[in-house]
Amino acid sequence: MRKDHYLKWELLAWLWIAFFFNQADRQVFNILLPLIKTDLGFTDTQLGLVASIFVLCVGICTPIAGLVGDLFSRKKIIIFSLFFWSIATFFTGMSYTIVQLVFLRSIAVGGGEAFYAPSANAILCEYHKKTRALAMSIHQTSLYIGIILSGILGGIIAEHYGWRSAFYIFGGIGMALSALLVWRLPPSKNIVPPAASAQRMKFIREAVAVLFKKPSAMLLGGSFMCLVFVNVGYLTWMPMFLHEKFNLSITSAGFSSMFYHHAAAFLGIIGGGILSDKLAIRSKLYRLMIQCTGLLLGAPFIFGMGQGNSLWIVYACLAGFGLFRGIYEANFITTMFAVVEPKYRASVIGVVYLFVFSISSLSPFLLGYFKQSFGLSDGLSSLGIVYVLGGFLVLVTLKWFFRKDSIPEAAEVKD
Image (cartoon, rainbow, N blue to C red; front, side, top):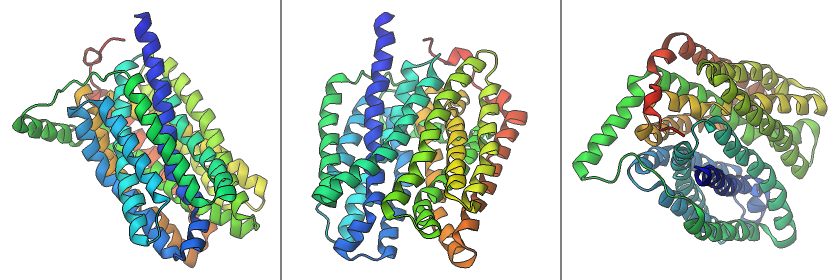
């Protein structure tokens, strides 16, 4: 038992590092866009195409990754995913044409990264029961730190050694890490072993049916889509907003747009995870209450983010937006898994991500339209309405469906 206790925290530590590079490799491209554009002579439209195809590729590949994660070794999938996106990141530094960028960045990196999350979340749930929300929260903090540090480290590397070197270094470290995980990552405990083709197809149909038979799963997935829709738009346009409205340099706008938000989100997700685990001992419903609070209280800060007339007001709103985002994210996976049987979890999350990322990929284009017609300030502020919609979906789940859809405690493996 004592060995298992240390094993589950070691697992979390290695997955935290892997997820760091998952997000760092994803965000470093956005940080280096001005240098890539100048060096290779690409247009904004071409670079926007690369970003859009990336998001769509993640959305399309994630449900496949979820199904694979329920049928095969999750440890092997995580390691292969890390190696694949890392080698693609490495070779992105050798790109000279838009076709090469689309293939290496959008398809290879996006597709490789998509296979990480479903298996990583599922294997964390295998080892963490009573500490599940806390473990998920700590794992999620890697996203925030990866986004922040990739901007700083990527900028320093590019400034001194060129933008290509940033891809070489990030990709090289990721490949080395994948080799280390072969040795240190504990084995997964998949419920369903690989089976005959007919049995696998039956399992796939069952997994997809689970999502559409449970209103709670669909509504909670819809609330997550609202959050991701807002986040994708924010990540795309906030640096431009600070650069144009407050005349910040590209470097300052990039750092400020990410730091205040994600630093506060770090605090929110840790606090939300700890609070959720304590209150869930009394009732699982508290997890949904915390989720709803995160979305509804985050909406006013999103509105103020776009309407602020001073940098410090904008920074304060970015922090408030991040804090309540983190509080929500501390509970999403945990509440989804509360209504999905263990053997189907990776598959269901994969299907949810398909819809979430496919629809959210529209956010940058819609904000671009608002930018031309009404201004970017109003466009960013309007994202607060989407957060309110997400909070409403959680409320509906809480009031009418969650109790009925929750799986019995006996379905969970004891810690």
